[in-house]
Image 1 (spheres, rainbow, N blue to C red):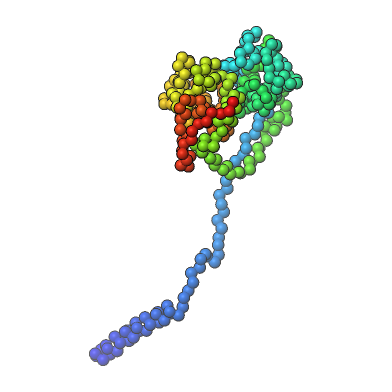
Image 2 (image 1 turned 90 degrees about the vertical axis):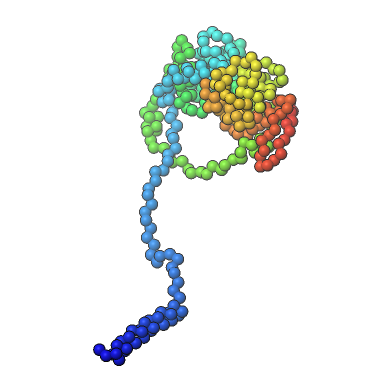
Length: 334
């Protein structure tokens, strides 16, 4: 192939390349395609099935009593109840009445004991159902009662305690019968609980900033005064005097026989420590002799701590809530 033919071939290749490049540039400037934001056909994948949580069913009291553990109930009574009650036949009352023979007896069953009007006015006997309601929340069963114990929230524990109280008799009351209907209801599936969002509440420091020492004083008289004194130099009762407790060591009252659970606690009674203690003493100091179950209401705990803060010659500064300046303690109206 001569040089002329070779030049023609090379020129053809160059022209084709230039033509392709020009066509591409024209296409880019004339056509502007739009990207799809989503695919034209959506295919939904099946979601994995999730199990719906079921609410725990309440077991009927007769069934709980039929399987109750008397020994567990006795241990609970020895740990919590004997602080204020005696249980032996013929034993004198303490702060509360003797409990021997209580199951099946009238509400004000101990002769000579000064019951509150709330219990004096209760008709009928201490049935198993009545004792279960009483032990759940005494203040709800008999509004105005002198009983400061908050109650036993666990139904199984209440049944164990009642089963033990039943043994405190020469002729124990027959246990209630478990019917086939009860057994069938207990086996039936429980309904699923409705989902509900629980809003987060204010912090304890924030509650303290607006707490009422006056309300705390009223609550302390209701829940604490049966076992504690509050005045400066006051004597111990069942529990220690509480004057100056905030900021003081856990075993703050000289001469008082604290449990090993509190003796082993290091550091002072801070606001957070008192809040944890009042929430559930047995959880804060396992092994404590404190029979009080605790307070669920954080607002009530804040009011009581605000009152305890005033029981001092030099009240502790409040923790800063949202940058607030610590407030001075004011003595509550009495």
